[in-house]
Image 1 (cartoon, rainbow, N blue to C red):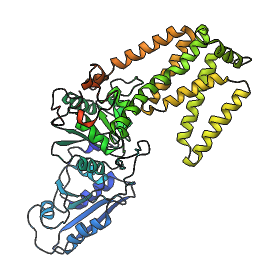
Image 2: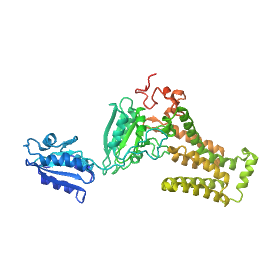
Image 3: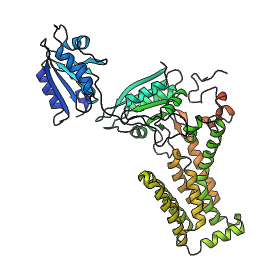
Length: 490
């Protein structure tokens, strides 16, 4: 039954009745532990906690021992008295809301009920094991911080607070998911945040009605206004330094318990080409890397389709000697050129995905077998032509440079191949125009997806197409145009 069912319900002043009530709520749950005890002064109480979710040492030393050794007279409300005079823990609370008690109990806290008192004490005794801090596998850097977020939202909040030691950092608590009641925090810097994005994010989260939220992608798909777009409009990262940097630019971050992935909004198109290493290396090196990513995105969707257009419709544009070589390689092939191209693209994607899923020790063997043996055998067996294999492989390698756009690159490449096969270079330019139209029409939480590219000037491009030196980045990006934009005094 959903926790919201118990919203507004109160406890009885009869301890045995309350114990039976909680037993009924958690019936058939053998992990729940209940310990009844009486203090030397005659104070009767019962402790409730889940085995494996509490810190046994904290529970014994800060809760059980003080209760068993307390021999003084007590007066007033017993729950309040215990918090003020008996318990040693730093974080305790008193509540009469049954739903809130259940939430705290399920999250690793210990619940204490007293005889003749309808209030309960919640004690922070959380002690479940976490994975520990390590560098995210998909966001490794050559130099820079090596820490990544964990599955514990409170640990993640502490890591962010260590990066941004300012009272300007705000963290608003929210819960969602009827069954999971997942804990989340909306984080932002109050003086620089994009107010429109913050308001819109809160609104969309409140509209979510789903029974479970187990990962950031649940939220991402539910709050995304461009639900069928191949381009993502919400950023994801597992690195504290990246989240801190985005908050400093006026974005909003959403921390979700149970996942190391953090969502950030608004998200701009240019962020797909930014690398963590860009900001930890000299700007001259970062400039080259970023330009290469933009060029690679263009080449990834263009090389196979343009090659197909040339050999199908525009043979006169190919040098004679090169055309004769291509033509000779295509003799006696069983498939038309378009089917050959699509087949190779799918095989390349299959090999890439398989390389990600297999154990790391098998990755090198897979690349040798897949990339060399299968490719060479397919050419020798006259199943595919060598020039087409080279064109598709070149486009695939270029696509590896823009991992954040791998889905968009794949679908764009397929569409462009079909357009070029049927309409030649005219189809290519139609496809490019349609792609640019889609990109420039997108919106991310009230901010234009291409906001940083709408104005062609050094000020707007200094952290988009290239990364300017830090002494030139005096103002924040256009994420929050009406807030404090200066970040460096000249």
